[in-house]
Each structure stands twice: as structure tokens, then as C-alpha cells.
Image 1 (cartoon, rainbow, N blue to C red):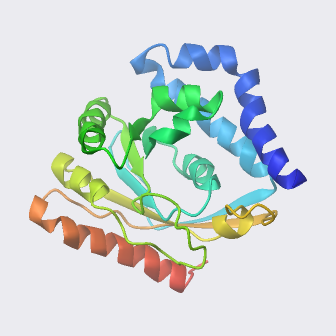
Image 2 (cartoon, helix red, strand yellow):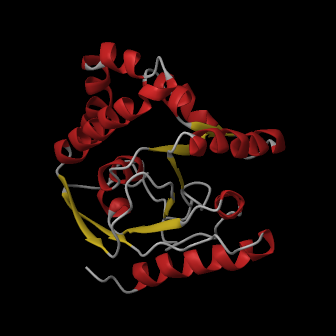
Length: 237
């Protein structure tokens, strides 16, 4: 129980301490890179404060100034922090609208992320409009394509939703897959579970989309899922 409480302390306390500069960083769109650097600092405080130590195997180095669509398996709240830690290029999350209700965290979440209500077709459509605006500013986008954390914690990898792959094809940006091995073990949604240790990450080769058409969406989705599933089934680190 104390371990869980400590997590929420680490999530909240840096936001309170950094509040003035965080407010400045979200006051203008072109200051988002400053907010992103602060978010990465916040993520590191949480990861190392919880005793989580990322171990990363990189198959690719991302090109500076190029937009990507980052995707990974989704099993834990710590997926957000680990994605921020691994990825140095500024990106925005596409995430669940209900997270905006979290006190303090939600205030910045709804002002910096692309929010989606998956039960609302209009909300899903707005994601593509918002993503286009961010991509035009040279940012990348991150989506967890399972659409949420699977309720069955025994499930290795849920089926992927179409949205991320439609977005990648529509905007001709490469898919950048990652596999998170240990986040569920370290900090799952089961209350009395988890503990310190290594968090292994495999950063896979990117998947180009420039020559793909919308009818290739399913193929791209299945290809990406297979890469992550193969790594989960046979870890390379």
C-alpha cells in the first residue's frame, strides 16, 4: 500500500514544485518543447524514485526533426513515464479523455495531449485533426494501439485498434514500435503488486508508410503487432 501511495506522491510533488514554469511552458504552442523537457524530467523522477531502472536495446536511432508515430504495448500507468524516458524527440500522447479528470495532472494533460473518447465517433475524428496540427509543427505522436490496458492481466498483447495506423498512412509518417517487457510486473493495476527492478525496452526498427495506401491499414497494423508480440514472447534482452 505504501508503495502505491509513494507513486502518487512522486507523480504530484514535482508538478507542484515546477508549477510556475509548467504554466509558462504551456502558455504558447511553440514553447511545447520546453514542456516536453520538463515532462521527461518528471518521468525520470518517478521511474528512479520508484526504483525502476530502464534497460534499453535500440535497433534504430531516430532522426532529429523527423516526425514519427510511436506505439508500444500498454500494461501499466508507468508506460507513460517510460515512453517519455526512452524518447528524446518531442511528441504528444493520444490518450483517454477521462484522465483529464485527475486533479492537477489532468490540468496539464488536457492542455498538452490529444484527448479521445473512444465511444464518441466525433471525438475519434477530432484526433486526426489535432494530430495534423501537431505534425505540422514538427512534433511526433504516441498512441498505445491496444486502446487501453487489457482487463485480463494474463493477456500478453491485446488486439490493436485501427486509429494509429490510419493516422500514420494518412500523414506518411513511419511507425516506431517499442516493446515494454516489465511494466506490468513492476506496477500493474492490481493494488497489492509490483516492486522495484529493471524495466526492459526494445526499440524496434521503424516501419515506413510513404508508399502505403489506406487499404494497407490492416497489413500495417498486423505487422506492427507481430513485431511487438514476437519480442514479448521471446525477449531479446
